[in-house]
Every structure is written in structure tokens, then in C-alpha cells.
Amino acid sequence: ALVVADTWEKAVKAAKLVKAEYVTERFETDFEKLRKYESKLKKISEYKRGETDAYKNADVFVEAEFSTPIETHNPMEMHATIAIWEGDDKLTVYDKSQGPKGTQSQLARCFGLEEKNVRVITEFVGGAFGASLRSWPNVPAAVIAAKKVKRPVKVLLNRRQMFSMVGYRPQAWQKIAIGANKDGKLVGITHHAISNTSRYEDYREGIVNASQFLYDCPNVNTSYKILPLDLNTPTWMRGPGEATGAFALECALDELAYKLNMDPVELRVKNYAELHPVSKLPWSSKFLKECYDAGREKIGWDKRQATPRSLKEDGMLAGYGMGGGVFGAGRGNAAVKAILKRDGSLILQSAVSDMGPGTATTMVKIAETSMQMPASKIRFMLGDTDFPPGPTQGGSTTTSTLGNGVSLVCDALKKHLKELAIANVASFKASTIDDIEIKNEQLFSKKDSTVKISLGELVSLSGKEQVEIIQESGRAAAEAQKYAMNSFSAHFVKVHVDPATGIVKLKEIIATGDGGKIISEKTARSQMIGGAVGGIGMALTEEVLIDHSTGKYINDNLGSYHVPLHTDVPHIDAWFPNKPDPVINATGAKGVGEIALVGFAAAVANAVFNATGKRIYKLPIKPEDLIS
Ligand code: MOS
Image (cartoon, rainbow, N blue to C red; front, top):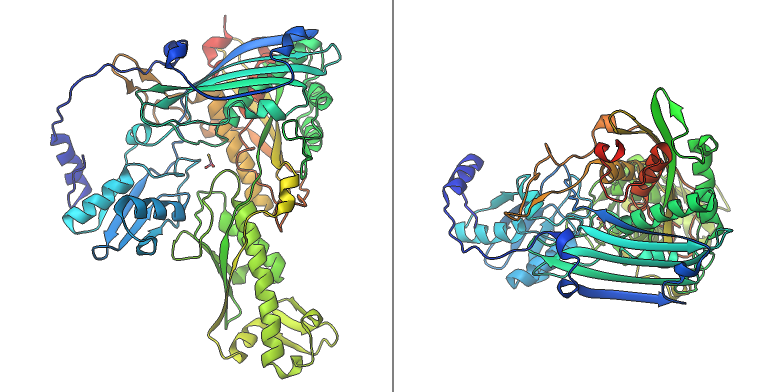
């Protein structure tokens, strides 16, 4: 139900006067209890290579169960939609969306409209982390209401509704077992996972996937099941699946390293996968060893004590830990329009959105390099379906996909400008395309430096107001099929644990990530820093609690759902090998959005073990777990 009024206050007041009648039915929300009933589970996937449960025959093995709670994205900006009907069959919607094109096609299908008659504008997105990869009830509610009242309608979710109407990272249980020979060579990995979904949709994610391929291991078997509960449907949240799975995998490896009396990084190096263990394909690029080396050096890994609870600093138990991460590196199709104006400024347009990583900045950087012109004269416009179709911002693919489109449209524009000069400028008549170079806002002949014209003048001389060109990137080339493509990370942390209170403090964080070519150092670093902050929340504070007697969320507000505070966040340093991937796209960028988080919580749990000797298998790690 939706109450519409002409002020926010009246709407809120009126909504409180609505009396709902309902029939109480039996409901199930208790994941920990219900996951034990096989009949309630739905099988999603099984994987096996080599022998099943081969870890049992290894010299040394660990077996452990891991629990992770429901987590919500809780971006600063809540979901909001403004719907405006412009006639019976034409709709404009301002929305919080990671994919303007996706929202457009959902609305067209939902309301039986032609796509071209639906315009979605989502120019600024105040954080999302996956929460805006699909539309939530606020979107159709605003559209229906606007039709009924024949006026534009705005619907804004409140913070409580951000828990119940927007998806979340599902609760998960995992059992993982890893066995190795005495020298640390892995023999077998077994990984089983269950996560929750809703009663009305099957939400699934890749919790066990990384266990199949992050390390070289001959025998691996995994299974994944989902448990429908009477809750709203979960959705992708940063590092969906992999972040959950890496907590188990990277903690279990750490435990195995202690059992082997081996350095945890050395264990990973010993089992470094040179070929993708599932597809047997070579990676298009992989510089994870470089990440291990840089992480060790920068955190001061040599100060780590192999014996837990043996390093003390200022009365605190000190510990070092690391965790590795991985995520798919893909690229899709993007169309980008370039507009060169008479004043020599360049505008680029694509229907993508930016939930915070600084996509426009990164795209301007690519155009700056390609066009050899100052960034101050380039503007990237996004967030409007009237622009050429761009990808949804998700799965760490925006820089890879859209950057490729920008690079290609700049190439096309340069070629077109050279042709224009030859056709329209007397002094260039004798030149060929290969003779002409574009640099410093000018076209000039490589053979005779006196033959030149500025970009702006060329537009004027061509008799046009502006020169426009649209380029579509197309999907990845056939060449890409010959490679496995991933981004990789290794997170190194140092913690202090107060022996009296059990409070964990991050003291230092080194986040290393192989995201291919780093196009914009500043925004990529910010991705890694943001991921680490999210990871502190995952490791130490974030957890949605349910009252199973009523089926309601208990802590559905930012006062009691704790995201990290500034005081929880230490100095964070990010480091990249910064090596272009030669296959993925024209820029060599693979993406860092997800790897910034994947593996981080494990690094914290491993550091906590190193500091205290207590192995914690359940997130978030709480002070009471550490004092006993
Ligand atoms: Mo990300 S979970 O693809 O926004």
C-alpha cells in the first residue's frame, strides 16, 4: 500500500492511519535451525574433479564450519524514485539505479510500454554496493501512483524499509575441509555451502566457486544449496558469493598453514595456480605473487610471530593476518557517443551510472590519454537512457567495458577528424591519415609541423556546429575464449586485541590488487580503501538480527546495525602491480570493485588468531568471542 500526499509530512502521517488486516500464517526465518533439514533445501550446484573428499587421505588436514550473517548494503542514500507520466504511454523516471538501461527495460516490460518511451535518469547515485542492481518496490509504486493521481510522485524508502524492501547479502553456512602433504602441497578441498533465499525467488551466488580454482589442487568437490525462508529476497552485495566463500577458504588455509608449521603466504605460493584449474586455460594475466610480495613488505610481515599470542605492543595482543581474493574479470558491450564542439571541448555520453567509484573521472582519463588533450576540456555525461546504451555498473566490469567503449570511440573520432582535415582544410589536402597526428588540441602533419589546425577550428571549418560519432564496442573478441580472466587481491592486516575487553582494532591495512592496468590511480585506490572499510564491517560489526518469534528484523536502523566508524578505520594503503591485461580490452584494465572486499574478512580473522590464539568461525567477530 502507498499513501500519496502533497507534502512528505502529510504522507507519513496518513500512512500511520492505515489499518492493515491480515491472517497470520506459520513462517520460517531461523536459518541456523532450518538449514539442518535436508528436505527444506534446494540443490543448486555440485562440482567434482579428481576424488571426493580426498583431503581425508592427506598428511595434514583441517575441517571447519563457518557462519556469516545477513548483511545489508546500507548506502548513505536510500532508494528513491520520482515518476512522471508525459501522456498515456510515455514515462520519465528519476531513480537510484546502477543500470539506467536495465531499469528502463524493466519498466517497459512491467507497464507494457515501448522502451523508447521510457526515460530513466540516474545521474547521481549516493552509494549502492549492489543494492541498486535491480529495482525494488519503490519504483513500480511511484509509477502506479503517478498514473493514479495524474501528477509526478516521489517515493523515498526510509532506513527501516532499506532492510525489508531492498535485498541483502544472504546468511550462509559453510563447511570446508582442506588437506595437504607435509610439504604444503594441497591434496584435496571439499567445500559445501548453504545460503538463504526468499520463499518467492531463488537467489543464488558463487559461494563455493573460488575454492574450485583459486589454488592448484588435484581433488576438489563442492556443493551449494539454498534454503527458502519467509524473508525478502537477498541480492548481490559487493563480492557477491566470493566474499562469503573466501572467508571460509582463506581462514581454513590459514589454519592449515599453522598445522603445517608453514608461513600462510608460502602455503599459497606453494599452491599457486599457473593454469585455471577448472577450465585448464591460461590466465590472460595474473600478478598475484607480486601482490603477496608487496603486501608482505609493506605490512612488515617479518615482524609476524609464527606462534599465536606471542607478540605484545602497548599492553595489546598484536597479530598479523592475510587473506586472498578473486573475482571474474569480464567485459560486455558499451556504446559511447563523442561530441567535439567548436570551442574544442569534448563531450562523451553513455547510459551508465556511477554509484561512487568515479566512473566519469576514469573515463575522462582514458579520453585524455587517447586524445592527448587536457582533461579540463573533456566531460563525461552519464545517467540518462537518452544516451547510447552502456552497461550496468556491476560485477567489477564498468571500467573494463565502458573504458573500452571510450577508447574505441576516441580512436574513431581521431580517424574521422583526420578525414575531415584532409577534405576541408587546404593545407592538409596532400596529407594521408597516417601523416596526421593529434596532440595538444591540434591536428598536425608529422612531415611538416607548420601544417596544423586546432580541433575547434577544424569543427568550424567543416561547417558543423559539432562533430559527433557513436561507437559500439561489441563483446569480447574470440581471442578472449582462450583465456581465463580474473582480478586478484591479497589483503594484509595488523590488529591489536585488548586482552581485557576483547575489542579488536585494525592498526594497519595493506590492500593489494591485480586489476590489470590502473587507469585512475586515485579512484582505484579509493575502491580498495572503500572495500577494506566494508571488510572491517563484515569482519567486526555488521549483522542483521531477526526475532524468530515475530519474523521481524530487530536492528533495522543505523543505530544498531553497525557499519564501521571513522575510529574503526586505520591507515589503509593500496598497491597495484598495475600491469595491463593484454586480452581483455583496449585499455588493459580488469577491474577492482569486488576484489577490494573479497578475502578481507578472512585477513582480519587470521590476524585475530595470530594475536590471540582464538580461531573465530562466525562473523562478525565479537569481543565476547575473544575473552574467556
Ligand atoms: Mo556489485 S555486487 O556488482 O554492485
